Image 1 (cartoon, rainbow, N blue to C red):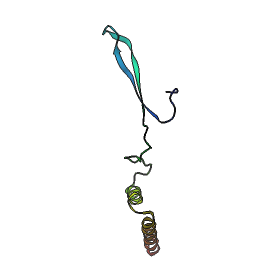
Image 2: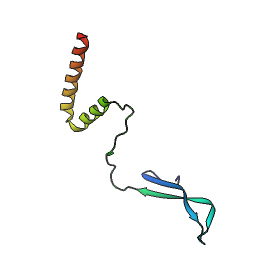
Image 3: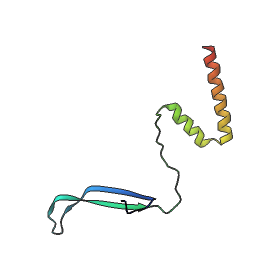
Image 4: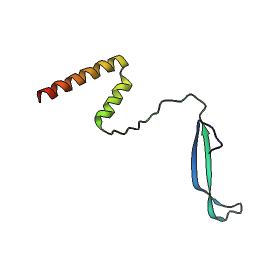
Length: 90
């Protein structure tokens, strides 16, 4: 894998080749490596990896993705103001 440059993705199977050229089982299976290179521009991931698994984190991320930046900023400010108001009453 070190022979490949950036932009390559690999699939490695440690026990892919099980038979020799005479169709007899090998004492130790041989591995196989497939190298793939995507020549297009990088695309946005279709899945999300987050450290925080809370519902709020997912809702916040979805709002950031869907809303225009200015509208998201306004909505976030309103939400933070509401939280402050509720906390001050408690």
